[in-house]
Length: 483
Ligand SMILES: Cc1ncc(COP(=O)(O)O)c(C=O)c1O
Image 1 (cartoon, rainbow, N blue to C red):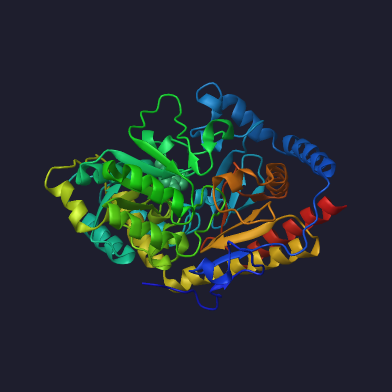
Image 2 (image 1 turned 90 degrees about the vertical axis):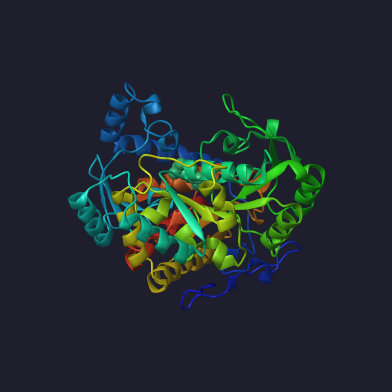
């Protein structure tokens, strides 16, 4: 099921080092380290940040007003805490294609695209047409229906899995998959990667973005359990560290049900797996009878038409999906090997949900199945690689202490001169400059996700003009940083 976009290179990496060789980045991924980085003048960075926050607050008066009103009825004035930033977030009134309009009437290039959920583009005509059809034929039956059977068939074929069940959010999908693994194995232990985010189910909140002061030894991280979380038997390991995983499995393998991980970590900007890492994790799981769950909520269709697992060529036992698979409608799923999914059929594991596979969400599946052709995704990926190449050139031209990373239609600029291979590396990147870069773009009409741990998404609605805007905006920032 491997897939390569037309015209894209296998691997792009200009500098070698001991831990990272060109062939290490299989499959097709992008990482280019700077060849002649020069540190930034941090006083200049601070000066620019102060200037840009002033510009932000004077240009977004209606967003501030909206925020002040929202504070009365919603904690932090937002529906999800991810949407908040200080002093207040921008409020959006509408969106179409690759663009959004905020309540101040500013047109903004959307490079967040709903944390990647809007891969199809806002109001994609195929999604709208399918959704309209559902609105005319019924939005909820709570019975089996040809449309849910059809959606299941499409998804199983596309992602190369035996069976699937639908849910409504990524949080649900990872919860169900991990509980299913526990029911199937009869074990209680769960392993996750330090810094990995998989939604709000109790065990998944452990060490999601832990404060380093509590996180302990980088080789054997202390599980950091947030208040109110009932984590159960939980273990935390660093990404790209096989000896740590092997040691853990040796000591506790007999009680561990599953390990959940993103095959490419996309909640720490973009962290690529080392050569052979995922295949070795697979082999270790087989050795110890541990279920391997790939959380493809973020990677999914943004990695290519069959998801990251198929592109990388390592087959997990279960996958979880959400975000992009629904074309912007609330939809999630978990699925995998029949032998494991049989635990749902034979009563070892219960999976319920009033809104599971509701016709509106199923319309999203049909639409995305039609839209996400190899050609369409390949075109978006080629644009993404073009942006990455051009930004890399600017990094070189201005000797910036940054590098570019990309996978599928996602990309990011990481403010570090060395590769980020795990959470501790990520924490060592320069968050001050990252804040400036994000705010700089926002003030010039480009929305990238808040939080500095995300990446941009080149959707099927982005074109050359949008790529040019992204690149030229970065050039202006580079000029400002060096002036
Ligand atoms: C990798 C991953 N898994 C799970 C989730 C949870 O998904 P949701 O926000 O739909 O609950 C997220 C959300 O960002 C995610 O990035």
